[in-house]
Length: 288
Image (cartoon, one colour):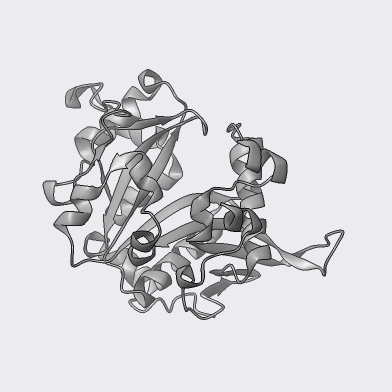
């Protein structure tokens, strides 16, 4: 946790990738290069999760005004940087603004350092055991500065993830995705749609932990208005579904972040071919 507080990552957690993973105009996507950039990504997360979305900060996050947990020390931090917006801190040189971020945790790193964040909400042990020969990547802590929530920024983040997946020969991605609110009754339409229309097949299935399990089949399949449900889903979850993702069984209420979480599982083999064509089989579309 002390390393995470300082933005310092364990040496074996750092991916060996080129500095730049892609670029569109003034926006560049790459991995955070040092502890200072990790701290800036944590600061963006704090602004989005705690100031905008009203999550409840623990002591470390409240004191630092950054979203921090112990996993920050073992993850790679994907960042989108706007080179046209220069921040001038009180101390240190001017620097371009970080406007988006995603946290990436490879399985081999998680196995050496206590496991995945997702395991605190979902029982993924069976999923991993059924696919022992595959390489998994956990995605999490996704956020974008409000003014940059557009197709260009999201496309660049996904280009960075796709390049990362190719370089590390990742076979499947997973992570928690959030619906806003902690009352599952108010989310009956969205949860029921995901249960009936996006449930993972047996080979990719996983359940919420028994102590945290919230049923998703709140409406019958016939009672689900598909068009209205799709409109109500958060853009991130809709994006995962378009790519070809599956949804695990059961949801989890996260009172700290004010959300109801579902498990997203995305085998690389299931990704819609048109998206692979869009980014390029070798991630060349937005290559710098």
